[in-house]
Length: 418
Image (cartoon, rainbow, N blue to C red):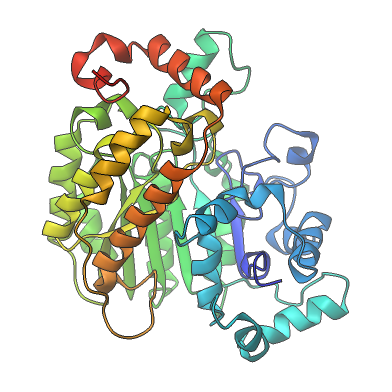
């Protein structure tokens, strides 16, 4: 069970940009766009109803029975490479570690929750989960190459124009006042509230972001961990001062790699602007209060200069939290050609590893930023050593050509050997 168990179906509520509920943000969203979306949606189902819905009952039973799920492929993939997955990080909140799983599971303060579900066919008596992971909408000013229409309105518009997508350009469940008030009021009434994490799209483009902050402040829900993930193109000084009221704030800034290559991956972004905004966020960093983390999705597109970005992070003692790319499959690191991977293996072999800090490793401890970066370097090396699929490699290079990447010699050099 230790290789698949995850506490998220008991501890967290996830809401997508279109208002559909979702077991976990690290899973591929298989509800939006289906008939289930009309059922499992904040517009038609309350949070307590979702918690003990058949969907969540099934999710909990699979965890308890040690059944692996295709939806959890991202975590399984990251763990196979030695990277720290969301599953591992979330289980630590229940004091369950990978190395001591059996003992930790039995002694976990959340064990009564798991035991109740075991004895009640997957149902739970915990109708006030401590964690919320919420997408405020798909409005976004970028069109990143690994992203899709459900997380970027800009991509949605492009695909609609190409007749490659028939869904809505904008998804924003928060515009429905009844749904918004139900969710926010429920969060504010949660006595044991500990975590609220906001995503998009670009959440700082959404006025509901600050509205939620104001309502949490009014409800005196400040003794929590409040996090958000931004693409780094926006910096709001006044908002940062307002966030100081919360016990712990985590600002995650998404950037993929170093130099012009990042501009090609994160279309619409200016890499230097994002780096400058990270420095602005770092001015607000305070030990055990306001953290700043760099969020990257290592892929076949970005691995070429990602190590340079990590070196920049080291100069600023900036922690890194990654999710190694699983989808779209053709962008996985392993599908680069053999000669390119050989060159990259030589490049990453020159990485100078740090001396590990004493004590137990913790993927959420920002003081261990060097350890986290070193682990990601090793995970990338493992990914480069995996066998490629020639069909996926062909898809990758066809996409690069279609995007016009080979027309720029500075970008082309990363994908061909002279």
